[in-house]
Amino acid sequence: MQVPARFEYEVAGSVREAVELLERYGEGARLIAGGHSLIPMMKLRLAAPEVVVDISGLDSELRYIEDEGEALRIGALTRHREVLESPVVRERYTLLADAERMIADPLVRNMGTIGGDLANADPAEDLPAAFVALDSEVVVRGTNGERTVHIDDLYVGPYETSLDHGEVLTEVRVPRSPGGSAYSKVKRKTGDYAAAAIGVALSMGGDEIESIRIGLCGVGSRTLRASGAEDALTGERPGSEAYSRAGEIAAEECDPIEDAKGSVEYKRDLVRVLLGRTVARAVERASGREV
Image 1 (cartoon, rainbow, N blue to C red):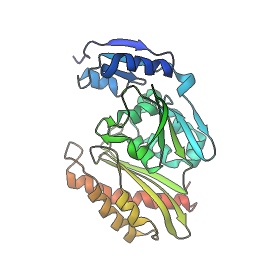
Image 2: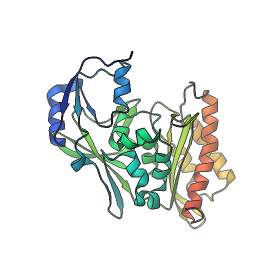
Image 3: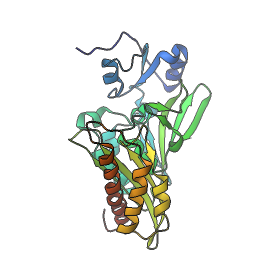
Image 4: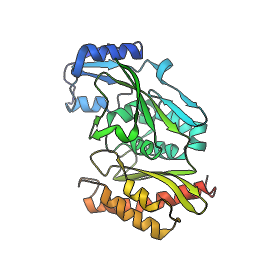
C-alpha cells in the first residue's frame, strides 16, 4: 500500500495568505491545487512535504482565460479542459489546443491546473514545451511583490524552477500567436507521457519563414528550446531539405535518456521526424491551408 508520510494541512483563503503560509513554514511547505502531480509523488515518498498548502479554492483570483488582443492571460487555477474548450485558444493559439488534446485523460484534464503543470517542472510535461514555443512568460507573487519570469528562464533542471521558495505562480501570459503553430507527440498509449514531443510557432514573410520558436519535451532533463534548429529555419523556404537539416540539428540539441519509452537514438530519430511534420503543419496553418 502506498501512503504519504505524515504532513500538516493548511487551506489558503487568498494568494496573499498562501504566500504568508509558505513564508511561515519555510522549505518544508508545498502548494497543492489539482494534485495530479504532487499526490502521486507523496504516495511514492518521492516528495515528503511537512506542510501542504491548499490553494484549490482560489478560483475567484486564479481561474480565468482573458484575451487582451495582443496577449492571452490564463490564470494558474484554470483547468486543462477549459483551455482546450476555449474558442479563442482554438482560433488563435492552435498549438495550445493541440497540446491539450494530448494531455493524459479526461480526469486529469478536468482537474489538473495550468499553474500546477508549469510549476511542477516535469521535463516530460506537454504544456511547458508548448509555452516555450509560444514565447510566454509567467507571473509570480511573493513577499517582495509581483514579478514576471520569461519561460526560457523558468526551468533549470528536472522538477526545478527558478522561482524562489514562497513565490506563487499566478498567471501565464502568451503573446498573440504568430501566423501558424502546431504540436506533435509520440506516446506508447493514451494518457502516457511523450517519448518525444515538439511545439512550433512561426510567422511567414512571403514564401520564407520569418521567425520561429521550437519547444521540446520528453527528450532532456528539462523542457528544451531548439534554438539551433530555429536559426537553421529562419529565412528559409519551407521544404523537406530545410526540415531535414533542422531536424538533424534539433536531434543533437536534445539530451534524451534510454527508458521504457525507447532508446536514445530512437528518441533522437523521433525529434528528426516530428520537427519536419510539425513545422510543415504550422506553415500550412500560417498560409491558411489548414484550420
